[in-house]
Length: 171
Image (cartoon, rainbow, N blue to C red; front, side):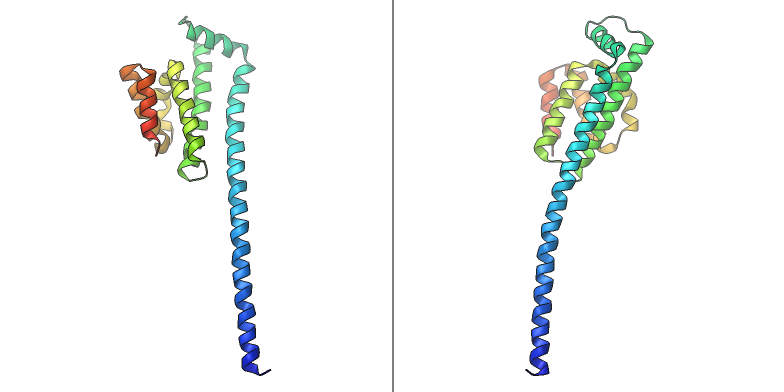
């Protein structure tokens, strides 16, 4: 075999190596993307569970929630508990919005999250008050989605109007 033939064979083997390496890299990238999505989903679930477990472990929070629903007078401590619960959940919402905007969070899951947010604002006017107090501290991405929903609910005080506003804000 001549040096030219060996050189050609070497180039062929090197080219095959590059193709095989690229295929391996594509498979690894896809697996990594799935792992990141899975970790993101798990993290978002953990955030919701943390907020809920904090609420469920506090009799004071449960009393405040019931009093609020029954339109009873709340103490400053009870108002602060409801405010802090909303603030914790807003941070979860902010993370969900970021993950969705970055393409890590699936559109169907995001829409399900958005529906839950709509229900939370609709069923808990204290959240609207908390949003009014905290919206300036939230990311512009989240504010761009939530503010029109809150404005619509204030304007119409209607679940349907709120749901329609939420549906139109999903990209």
